[in-house]
Structures are given as C-alpha cells and as structure tokens.
Amino acid sequence: MSHGQHVHQRRLRPEDAHKLERPERARWLPPDELLDRVGIRAGMVVADVGAGTGYFALPIARRVGEGGRVVAIDASPEMLELLRAKLDGTSLPVELVHGEAERTGVADACADVVLLVNVWHEVDDRVAAAGEARRMLRSGGRLVVVDWRDDVSGPPGPPADHRLGMGAVETELRGWGWDVQAAEHVGEFSYLIIASAS
Image (cartoon, rainbow, N blue to C red; front, side, top):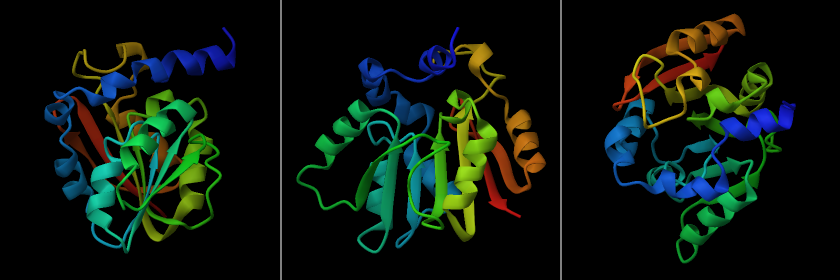
C-alpha cells in the first residue's frame, strides 16, 4: 500500500461529508461544550485544521465575532466548497485555506488556538503536524486535539485500529516539548487534549 492510499483510507472522503452533518453528532460532541472547555471567546483567531463542512468553524466564528477570525483549513477542496456554500450570505469571519495538517500554508504566529477535531488519527507525520501547530501559534497560544477514544467501541468513528488513545497522544506531545494542560473525556466518544508550546 502506498503512502497516498494509506492516508486516503483513514481520511473522511468528500462523498461521506453527509456523515459530518448527522443530527446525532451534536449529542456525541456538542460544539458549545467543547468551545466552553477550550475557552473560545470574542476576538480570538482560531485555526480549525481539518475543518470539513464547518461543524466547529461556524460556531467558533459566531463566538469570536467580527474582532476575531476562523482560519478553516482542509485538505479537501470539495469540503471547503461545502463550507463556502454555508458561508454565502453571512458575515461570519471565516477564511478558507486548502492545506494539510503538516503544511497549512498560513502565516507564522497567526492563531491563538490551533484546533484539530477527529484529525490527529488521520495524520501520517504527527511530528510535522505538531511542529506546524507550534509555528502557527502566537505566544501563549494553545494546541487543542480532540479525537476518538480507543476505550469506547464504535460506531461512530473510525475502526479501532485507526484510533490513537488519549494517553498515547499526551505522551507524544510531551515528548515533543509540549506542556499538556488538560487531558480528559469530552462528549460521548471523544477526548480532549489542551497543550501549550513550552
């Protein structure tokens, strides 16, 4: 199996975008619960890496308001087009960027929070992705990783062998010089890690 095929198998395909819109997703992982826990507030700039169709980007944009901004980054042009359609006719402060977690293409020190929801397990080069997050963060900024628990069987979510447990991700980040401030369960099937560059 080639590198490209491996990534494709783990990443949500554009034709499966409807899965991001399921009403039950709000029960599994309520956006407001997560955004409260992370402390998203007016005026912040949040980089939403793997933004998909905007499940988090849109509520974040409403929270940060006109003084803030959401940089919605996705590797799929199709996902970005679906999000662009949702933004039509709104004044929400969302910038769409085609990029990968390892190479976003955005400016240095541009974000207060770098958020990756259900993306970390899809990333082949997590060292590069963590380095890219560090590059994007302003002084005092935080990396937020939300992903599928490996101690709760699905569906929903990816197969068990694609999941990375909370402890493993926490250990990785600490090993790469991050200060992990929180590691806890959130919603019904997910965990949340908040870390700052130390």
